[in-house]
Length: 310
Image (tube, rainbow, N blue to C red; front, top):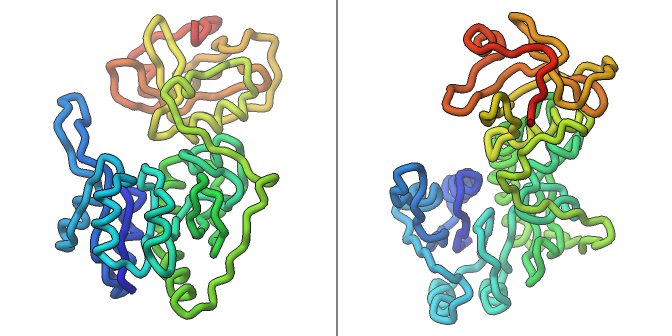
C-alpha cells in the first residue's frame, strides 16, 4: 500500500520500521519541525526524521499540517492510507478525506480509556493491570474515531512509564500491519467508541511530579514509576530537590507525619505517607547522580524525624 507516515518521537519509529520491512511504499514522512533541545539548545532532528533519512524517504516538517498549501502537497502524494502515531498535530477534515483507505491512528491505550496525550504514564499512575494499543480510523475529534484492532499488554508489578513505552511502541508496529492488511482486503471491522466509557490522559507537566506525602504510599509508588524517566517524581531534602526513582510500599501503620523519615539505617530510608510507608530504593539529589539508597546514605546524612518536602 502507498502510505504517508506521520509521527515524531521515539515511540513512532518501530511503526515506521514495520511498514518499510513489510514492503509498504512509504511515499513520505511528515514530522514536527526540528527544535532546540538540551542544555546547549542545539537544534535536533526528530527521531522519526532521522529514521526516514536512513531509508531515503522524503521528509516534510510543516509548522501547521492544516495549512492549505501543505494539504495540496499531501494530495499530490496520492497516499492510499495515512498512518499516524504520536505525531503531535491535529489533522483537518481536508486531510482526513485524502486517502481512500482513510487515516489510521495507532494509539497507546485500550480505547476509549485514556484518550489524550499521556496514556502510557497514566495507566501506570492509576494502577491499571493491563493496557495496550488500539488502531482507529481518525475523525475530527481527539482519539474519538472508530476502533479497528486492539492488542493487550499486561503491566508488570514494577512497570515504569519508560518500560511500558517500549512494549507499546513495539506492539504498535506489529498491529498496524494487521490493520492495513484487513483494510486492504475489506475485512476490517469498525467499532464505534462509547463516549461514556472514555477517560482522558492529560498532558504531563513537571509540577505533576511533586510528591504529596499525604497520599497513600501505594499511590506515591505508582506516581514514581509512572513518571520514570520523565518528568520524574520529586520531593525536597535540606532545601534541595530530591528525585525518587524507585520505592517499595510497606503496609505498616505509623503515627508519624506524612513525609517524615521514620527509619534511616545504612540500608534503608523509610518515609511515612498518608497511609502506609514508602521504603525508598533509588533516588537522586539535586546536582548528584542517580544512585541506590545504600550508596546515597554512605555519603549523605539523613536523620529520623526529618520531614521531606518542607
